[in-house]
Image 1: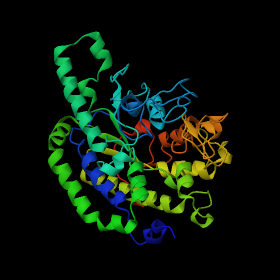
Image 2: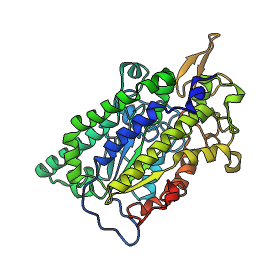
Image 3: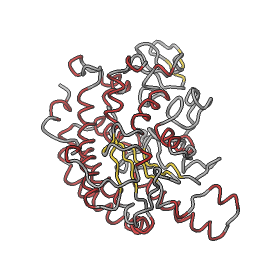
Image 4: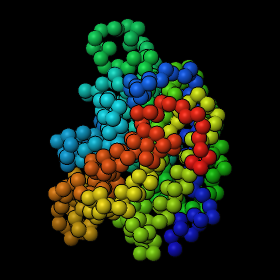
Length: 410
């Protein structure tokens, strides 16, 4: 029996526990300004600052390490755009809904514009800092703590530049200092932490290291982030839109690599053990958000249940016009999937190319890990309108402080 399934019912994964500890620190970092003015006709967010992994990376990994090849981006942009999809990501639909341009990746030096925010998300990023094995496994070294330091540096540099240059070009391309406190801060990360834990460690080994690891993380945040904390408490954000992680057991990559038995799958064809770990992560993340709400009464935090949104789409794919809900569009060659956009050689020596399917809009998964433009649009519409949020509020009203929270949400 899969060791994850054997032990998970009695014990927790360290990734979920450690993630909760880190998120308490990094989310608390931002909170400390006076309440902002609320517009009667909905919230006006002048900017978005996003932190995450490949689910919301708009070009960072592609700019720093390697450019994503065609057919990535082809459906919407007509060319690779640095996004791990054939088109738009959920963060793009959020920006569109708020009347803002698509976010430039902070690490992209060509054509970037940060007037209305910046995207610090990087493909392969984790909440926990990388160890050597994770780096060799091609996870990104730009973990969440690095992303927050980049944000702090951006704020400091904006102040310096404005004091030296007030030209129209500068005004049109960098944030206004007063907008940092009015912006929406979005967080979508954690999938890679869970995947790495399940990839290399037995659950018993992970559990044995929980207390030492969480203590070390607490000390790391306390000592290494103190300068950032001071800066962000004085000038930081107030409004947060926090995504949980999706159903990892439904990803075609996971199903291809684990080769599960039929009894390991649920009614939608997803690997139950991986989804159980994701659900435990989400449970603890939600508890973290609820705790922060209680402690930080002048902040507004919205918890977004991406897991349920995506699992609903997968389990009812035919109803919404999709096919093969646990299959992939790009890189799918029969029973032998290949990397999207890359050349490969099969076991019998045949050269193949990981090309796109004929109609990406019919598939939920684009490349076995990331969602298609069509699937992202479906999920984004429901998330943005508040159908999967706690509290159940549209993103256009996410700046509003609700007078109380129903205990049933807990």
